[in-house]
Every structure is written in C-alpha cells, then in structure tokens.
Image 1 (cartoon, rainbow, N blue to C red):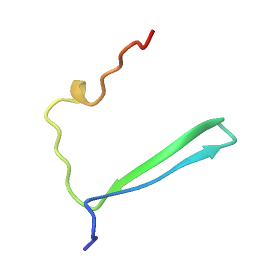
Image 2: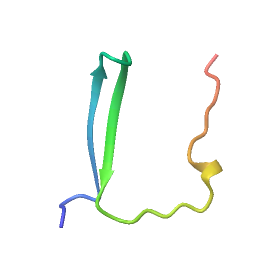
Image 3: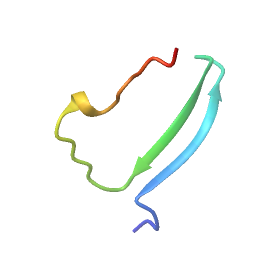
Length: 45
C-alpha cells in the first residue's frame, strides 16, 4: 500500500500545448454524488 492517499506531481510545462500540467493520482476508489459539483468557476475581475 501507499504511504499517502493522494500523490501529486508537477506543474510541468508542455511545449506542444503551451500550458502547465499538474497530476494528482490515487490508489483508491473515489465516489462523487453529482458531476455538477466538481469545479466552481468565478470571475476575479
């Protein structure tokens, strides 16, 4: 078993897509109730 529930790596700069990539991996089962609550975007200006 792993010592941590979540393992994160990055950020890495991808030259092909010209963006930063960040990876979070887990060795477990994640359960979400509703896909509409995954992310919330808000305007900063």
